[in-house]
Length: 372
Image (cartoon, helix red, strand yellow):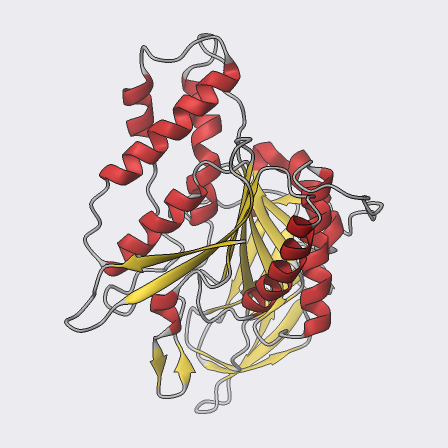
């Protein structure tokens, strides 16, 4: 294992932060996997999974079973991890700007198209190498204005040339679920099966330029632009993995999740050894456009009737909101049939607050599909 310490630029006088990346195997073959934990720094389960992954990858490296390189960033957001406000960890948004740490990564496609015109050929693998090198150059040329932008450039630079990217998160209270690109549904389904994920949510573009799409989106966009002229491979499978809820920090679960990821990488040819049989998936893929974010119609106490993992019928109440000032009680009803896969952990809502998410099968939303 090779350890690299990456320095972030100082945000204020006398302060500095470091990001640590762990590199297993060798980068000689060109094959690469990138895994990061807790880009939202208050999503702790991912960091524990990363600890178990580190131990497993060390053993696999010693046994000579890592094909290519696997890069693990066990704590991806030192900025957010330091945002402890009077006992509450505030790791989803950067305090200086209010911007979500998992938004506004660099969308490279427009610049790539301009740089690649006249340089691509008929060798798909050579085109992949050229595209990755051009990506690295574009990221080197990016001049971040804030500490958070510097972190985003660093994470994107570490991952942009990977074949597989796993971005490990969690929700407030949730069952395991996955966000992925529509075009990569078949390639991601084995991971869904090994993890026992209960929802697999697909979108071509979810909006907001999240980390996972900064790695995968460029390939199908370039393939569409150069269609009929030059072969472009779908060279990066990039997935956001939601590891249940924020308090599901247990060694047993983390060990289980880490082994599931090892098996996924093994079946993809990045790790050697005997492959465990793939379990049957616990869900079918559904469109992210089909997710209903259920919002509170007014402020009040939240009382849930349904838990993550429960199926919900059209018009069924998943809970209710009780206004303690007026005594108004309003049911929280789903307008779609599907799986209640996540809900917020707090039990007081303000008007318009999204309190739960139901995965329906029919698309009906558009625009920015992710929560704030």
